[in-house]
Length: 381
Image 1 (cartoon, helix red, strand yellow):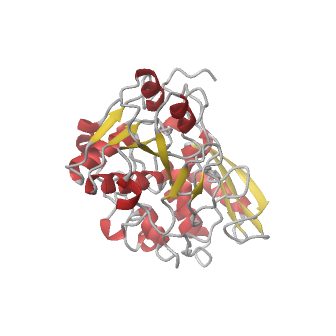
Image 2 (cartoon, helix red, strand yellow):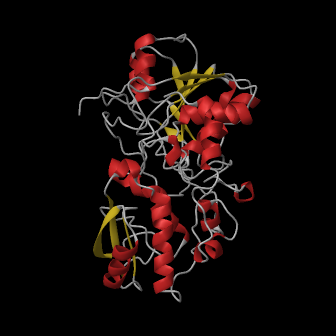
Image 3 (tube, rainbow, N blue to C red):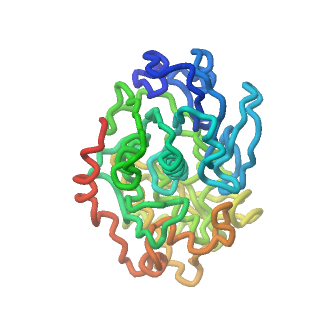
């Protein structure tokens, strides 16, 4: 695909608007590519920028680490530059990590869901840089959901449920780019931060998909997955396998105890907005490993208008109405939540989420008009 959208890194390479002699730390992963498909660290080095340290988020620099798995520090084999893992014993750069750097460049992808952790790695970097007086240049990238702000979906995060999959009071699908959120967070939390933004060119959140997609993590290998991810990820907090290890992670789901044919009939009657297919598969990871799972595949009819969170909340409520003795909460163990407790609360961002889910008391639209007003001054596109 020939790209008409130009990422922040493309513009920086063209304008060379910073001093190349600065010692630069680059926060990135395998999806941090130019629009032409060259990794940003290599493109910047080739252009003469002095990249001396790399920082990597969850899944590691190469983007292949298992979900929630500890990632160690290592050396980039292509450049021999040290890589500091920000999903290890630490989530933020330390004073020592930053001491020999003049500038931090953040060039991270995102997929537009509050619990996708690269957003929160960014906030930890911003926080450290404010604390230790280091300037930040954020190179912007698309939010690939590509929906207008008014299509954002809650619930908003109750900060009593704050965690590494949601630190601050924003909706599940915020419809912003990382640069827009960085500006918003600076205004609220990091007022002394020296933050510069390099915008994209030729990107529109509601209409433009003319740019290449680079896989952002092991389960996010194509653009189609992103349209269902924000809703289907709620299955991580329930005893339903979320499709990891199949060709359609976060687009199909199942469990040994689901009668897929009956569920298909009920969902067909009650829900609109997506085509559905019955699926049967043997789970290879995350839950019910080695067991036959039965469920559905969800295919949004109009991805850029699909309300993923509301759809899957409705779907989960149908599953509960049909199989009330089977549907239960699941502990989801990660490096940042070793016991896995209250994962559904952390995903939905509200205490006692399972109770309110079963009682049909979760409102995904509450607060969205206020969000649109609050975030608008920080929008770049």
